[in-house]
Length: 170
Ligand code: S3P
Image (cartoon, rainbow, N blue to C red):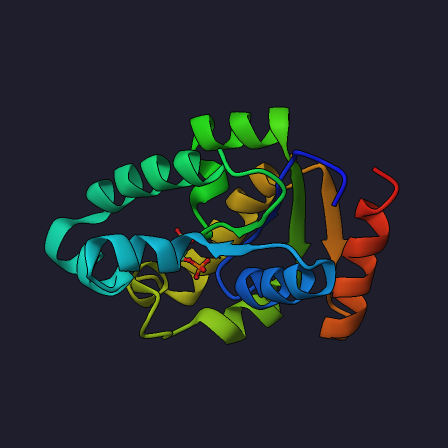
C-alpha cells in the first residue's frame, strides 16, 4: 500500500462491510479492523448488551471515540458500524483524510438480511416500514462517500476486485 490513508467501508447493516473489508485486507496484505468487534473487545460486552444495559447514546459515544482513535492508524482497512458515518465528526474525518467505499444494495436485499437479526438491536425494534425509512435516510448520508459500489449484481470476489481496482491508481 502506497498511501497513509485508510480504506473505510461504510453502509447499512447487512451490507457486508466486515466480510468485504476483511477480504480486501487479505488481498492487499494490510491490517483489518472491525469497529463493532473492537467495541465489543474493549468493553467486554456484545453490541446488543451495550444497547440493552447502557442505551444507544452510550453506544454512539463509544462508537465515536473508538472510531476516531482507529482512524489514526495508517494504511489499514476499517469496517464501520452502520451508524458510524452518520456521526458528523467521524464522517468529516473520513472524507478529509481517508478513502471511503459505500457498499450499496437494493433495499429488499438489505431488509431480508437485517429484519429480525438478533445481533442487531436497532433493526430488532424497527418495523419493515421503519427499516425502509432508515435505509432511505441513511443512503443520503452514505452517498457522500468517495466511492459507491453497487453490489447487487456482483459476487463477493467481484466486489473485492472492483474496490482494489478503484483504489490502486490512487
Ligand atoms: C448499527 C449497526 C451495527 C452496530 C449497531 C448499530 C446501526 O453494525 O454498530 O448495532 O446503527 O446501523 P453493522 O452495520 O455492522 O450491523
